[in-house]
Image (cartoon, rainbow, N blue to C red; front, side, top):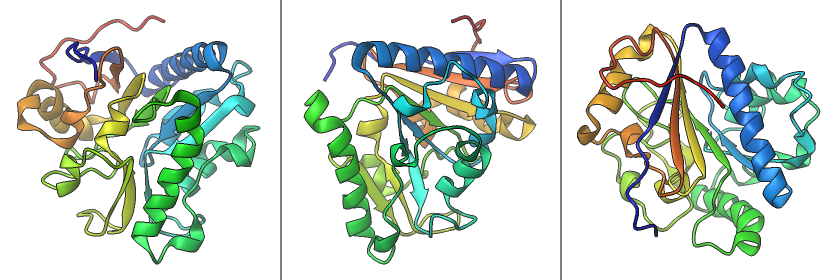
Amino acid sequence: MSHHPPNPPVIHSFASSEVLMSSLASFVVKAQKEAIDKKGRFTIALSGGSLPKQLSGLIGNHAVKWDMWQVFYADERVVPLDHPDSNHNLCTAELFSKVPIPTANIRTIDPNLLSDLEELSDAYEQELIREFAQKDAARFPVFDLILLGVGPDGHTASLFPGHELLAEEDRWVAYIEDSPKPPPKRITLTYPVINHASRVVFVAVGEGKAEILSEVLDSPEKGLPASRVKPVHPGQLFWFVDEKAAAKLRVPSQDFKL
């Protein structure tokens, strides 16, 4: 565990969602290049919601080395992979069906284990162990990049306000049976995994996010789930937001430059 305090969040506010999308694509490509140059692969975890649509700047982008990506899901709903509630289904529709990524590089939940949440989350944890443990020999996996959204209640991934999973310190992947937002059954990466990433990026657009962004970033002492994302040093936390989402923020934003 690092003895340095976590780096403060870096907030980038963009005039429009279009500028945000192109800037986010540039950021992802830079993170990808650094990872591939260092270790020959790029490990990334994605959420669902509005996030996949914000990644459209990667489509047709020749700087993206899709064959080097190893994709995991920051959380997933316990439904078949082609179900409308599936994050994998959403990411496939918005992004992966439009780019040349090998399907073997996208790590989904095992659709044969949907009836046993313990076994399902253990199997997904084993996917992480196969990718990270032998290669990096760390107590927790170190993702190159984790991309997250934030809900109107301050939840992120499938970590919800007041839920016992907020205190999970050992497991890499945990399950939830009582999500306050349907569907109730999900699996999620835990804080130890999220907070060991090299980079975590929250993406939030639209005036509907303004209230919760202010709560998460201006009042982190409230302890909302998104406020608890604090990557350990030297990890970095970024927020990519548009002006509408940033309208009520008191904390300053910084100009975006790579």
